[in-house]
Length: 330
Ligand code: GLU
Image (tube, rainbow, N blue to C red; front, side, top):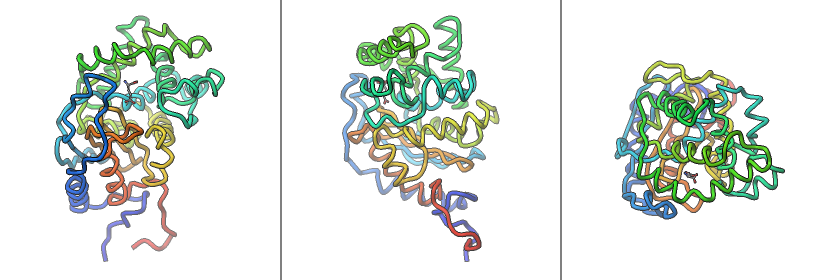
């Protein structure tokens, strides 16, 4: 009889290396030819992404990495930055202040919705939708735009364990198409819910979204949140354990756009995706799966990434909600 834990169970330890390697092979081979979904068209600099790129990687909280495919292809982090900026801002201003100013509730409407602000009487609702992400980025400390940018780029780089840089083409392209985010920021400001100048906050947010990462980086970043805020590759503490926990709880309820409830129900792991095709899913105490593949479903989640993530959640026992009666462990 195996001494390994039942893969369905979230508590306990990960399966052994052979099981993890076999699961990665399975996730990669099974979905590498899946061609459902479409590459984002709204942002010209992202529309040209090679649709067949696919990489998937699992990094555990001891820093061991298991990777398949295009895990070193770089892409802009986009919405995934929201999770990490949120953790950094929580660290700076505290749990209660962020809860009061940004909120944590699911809006039930798309990520860039104006209605969510109006329904919430001016409150941005949660930090994974754009209104809340803009409010969160507005709370980044610093006296000047440069100081605030330094805080963000250094903070996200510490999560990744290497110096991240901006994809200037994506930044310029999104700056030209950021009217909607400018509208959200102005609306928040009109409700007294945005700290800072709306134009400057949108610019900072647009740059944060254009930071370049690869799937390997995302897995290290996710594994840092899953490892009580300590980067398992560098050993550096990036945020306190409580802030890592807060970020994961918000990601769990809202990280997969308007499919967040369905994702949590089916897969049971906090995950954040972005429109360039990245996705990172984090299982506290165990590690993070990251995937990159640019074809998206209609909610904006990478199709191959979503499918590979769901498979790995089961195979590696990452599901937070699965349990087994005491005394039945083999
Ligand atoms: N920069 C994009 C925006 O805010 C990010 C979108 C995303 O990845 O969800 O509109």
